[in-house]
Image (cartoon, rainbow, N blue to C red):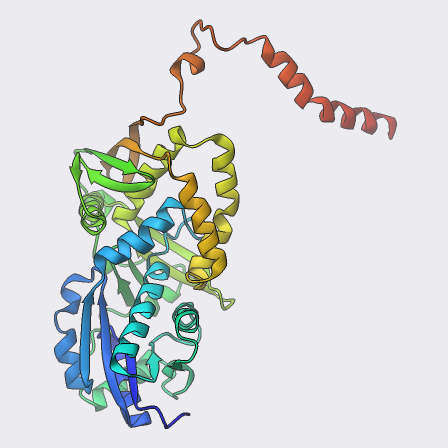
Amino acid sequence: MDNKIKKVVLAYSGGLDTSVILKWIAQTYNCQVVAFAADLGQGEELDPVREKALHTGACKVYIDDLREEFVRDYVFPAFRAGAIYESSYLLGTSLARPLIAKRQIEIAREEGADAVAHGATGKGNDQVRFELTYQALAPDIKIIAPWREWDLNSREALMAYAGRHGIPIPVSKERPWSSDRNLLHISFEAGILEDPWLEPPEEMYLLSVSPEKAPDTPEIITVDFERGDGVALNGQPLSPGKFLTALNDLGGRHGIGRVDMVENRYVGMKSRGVYETPGGSILRAAHLAMESICLDREVLRLRDSMLVKYSELIYYGYWFAPERELLQQFMDKAQEPVSGQVKLKLYKGNVTVLGRRSPNSLYRPDIATFEADTVYNQADAAGFIRLNGLRLRIAHALQGRNK
């Protein structure tokens, strides 16, 4: 333990873990603690943060509105690439952590702090995401990770510590799970969710109604794209943050975007996560539809061949790694023609594509038609098929000789 630390910038949410951590760092290291909370779309969750941090012992509190930067510089680049982890997770928490850590480093420089701290456990992915960003942007900074240092080895122990020090906590036996919220999603884990057989209770969900309780009348919307980014909803241009906020409202109203999965953490264990990503689920469906008429087949396949690696880099915490930045340049180049409009139907948990159009469309009705045309000679297909079947005929002949 380094007792020479004078000032620490803590990534602070006001939840159980970081509330206890703030007090613990101040007492253990006998140092000043600057609390930093990033406004990424948590809404009313941020209201008590400043007063609570000061009450718990923070010498100063930053609450920075990073909503537009988050969507513009993190969510949109990932969606341009089609990022998705293990076919289900749209990387809401994974994308937020490098932005939070980056701003932490900036505040540390402004405040003359010699250390940064986070509330991630030693079992999870977030410790890697935070610390890889710290190391990429400020390799000289000291890092405090209390979950790897203290003897408070459970949430029950944290709740007891909070009680002894008069720290109000949002976790209770009535809501035995933890959550993380931003404009892209809200995630739930731990507590009763650690049993993968148990269905999540309906009262847990915050952003969406259940599909059964969604409106009986479908809603038709349009989404406009420019170079792979959503720029307008129902014909109204919106900034990135307001665009995703509006999609969240629509998706939540129609019960869209709930995911319950068991995922593979970077550290090697499996973990159950439950997610609500209403706006992101709509955006992904619309983006895939837009790409379907704008992207060349081989460009799309090459992009998809890199998709697993790209998504893993974000999930594992390598946002600021050179390989992710290199892949991003390719992804962004591929998205240059992805502009146009998609029409969607939202209904009881489902997003259905009704139509798509683009000035850059590669879809040619005069070629694809089953009616008479002057462009495509169907007789040419015989030679095409025969050439592609050559290796199959050779293999079959070889098998016959070897019997």
